Length: 135
Figure 1 (cartoon, one colour):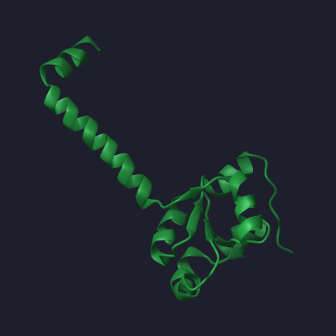
Figure 2 (figure 1 turned 90 degrees about the horizontal axis):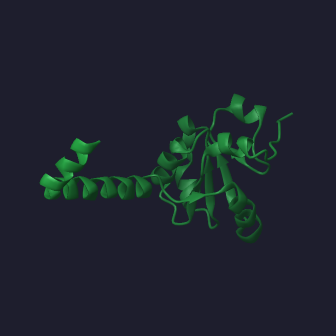
C-alpha cells in the first residue's frame, strides 16, 4: 500500500488521468443503461401517469410470477413491437430479471419517457413485493 501512495505522488498526471477515465466510464455506463426507476417509485408512476409495464422475460418466467398489470413482450420478439411502443403516449417501464436487458430494450425502442426497473424482478422479489402468477 505504501508503494501505491509513492506511485501516486511520483506520477500525479497518470493518477489524475486514471481518475478522469474512471469517472467518465461510470457516467457513460449510467447513461447507456437508461433511466432507472426504483420499485417504490414504480407504483407512483403507474398510478399518476398510467405507465405501461413491459416484461421482457420469456413466457415461462412471466407465468411463474410478474408484476400486476405488466404485459409480456419477450425480448426476442421486441423488434416486432418497436413502432407500437414508440407511439405510446404514456411512460414505459421495461422489466427483466436483473435490469441489463431492460436497459438495452430501452435504447432500442427510443421512447422519450421510458425507464427500466432498477434490479429487475430479482430486486422486486428481494424486497418482498408481490408477484402475480398467470392462470
